[in-house]
Amino acid sequence: MVPALHLSDVATLTLDPIGPRAGATRGEPVESGVVLFEDAHLEAGVWECTPGCFPSRREGYREAVTILAGRGVLRDADGTEHPVEPGVALALPEGWSGEWDITETVRKFYVVTYSEPREKSSTP
Image 1: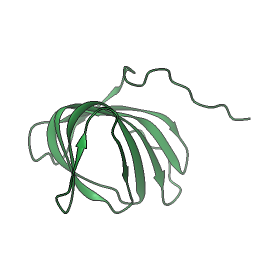
Image 2 (image 1 turned 90 degrees about the vertical axis):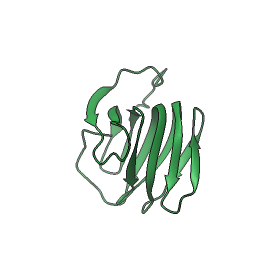
Image 3 (image 1 turned 60 degrees about the vertical axis):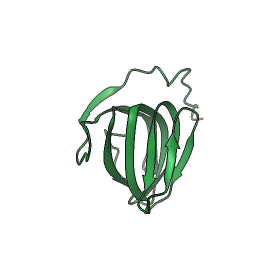
Image 4 (image 1 turned 120 degrees about the vertical axis):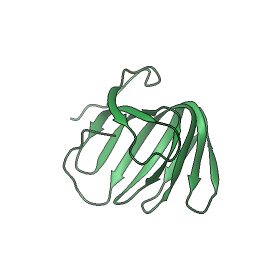
């Protein structure tokens, strides 16, 4: 039997520093996070980023997120804007590209599924 993973409050979970977000187009966003579960096909964790704007894409994986804290906009490559605020859920399909425009430090719970089996990662 494999037990379920249960965390009572991911909104206040202590995260590990990742560092400055590469490729920022505005500000100096800094990331932190923690991987809560991972195997060859799936990863789940919590990610946080301070204000700033940076490009993002999903290649080789898809991601579902629930915003726990913060504010901003997730902007698709075609300019469509999706508000980012607590309680919002987003699904980013494989091939998605756009940018995060964070105005208040964002924390998200995420689940990533990979198209191909992979080695374990140390960053969300």
